[in-house]
Amino acid sequence: MGQAIGLFAVTNIDDILILSLFFAQGAGHRGSARRIVAGQYLGFVAILAVAVAAAFGATFLPDSVIPYLGLLPLALGLKAAWQAWKHRGDADGEEERAEGGPQALEVAAVTFANGGDNIGVYVPVFATAGVGGMSVYAVVFLVLVAVWCLAGRYFATRPVIAKALSRWGHVLLPLVLIALGLVILVEGGASGL
Image 1 (cartoon, rainbow, N blue to C red):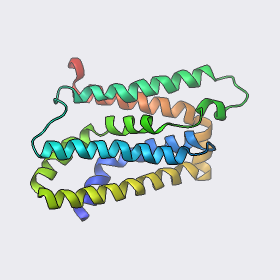
Image 2 (cartoon, rainbow, N blue to C red):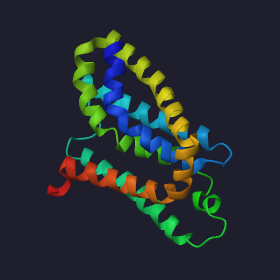
Image 3 (cartoon, rainbow, N blue to C red):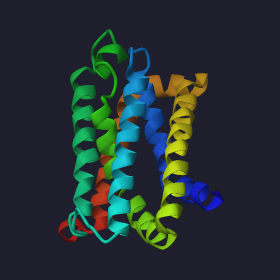
Image 4 (cartoon, rainbow, N blue to C red):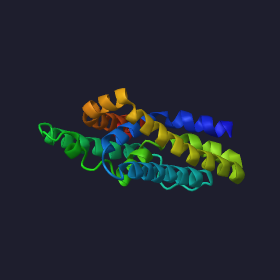
């Protein structure tokens, strides 16, 4: 179980920042926390499903396609940047800019796209762990997704952090998503990048 906790923490540390930004974007919008958590679980379950299937020898995506998952956060980041620019002079500020907070499928897409490295690490571990070991890893990982969501929400609601995120979150979220998309594309070698 300790190995599962360590593996999850190492492969998902960057998700706390992204979750904090999503929670900050959804602050004050009814149901946004539920959508963020649902999206995080949906994206992570997809990561687990692909990793488990690959550990059993099935592959849904050829390795050459994985870097192109970076297009998902890149597109969402560009969309968020467009919304921030479009509403830059609005007197209402964040409420209109956030437009109800992030949607579950947006969070799931970012989680899954950011999980390419997770899949690469999980497959060999799962392949050697067997069915029982894989089950333990999956259960521990799914419990830790909740812990990560709580940590992301915790950071987004700390007064100092919340103030900074409310002031700069509309700029930070697009930048983080665009950077994440570009890193996934470049590190994966998409089109020779």
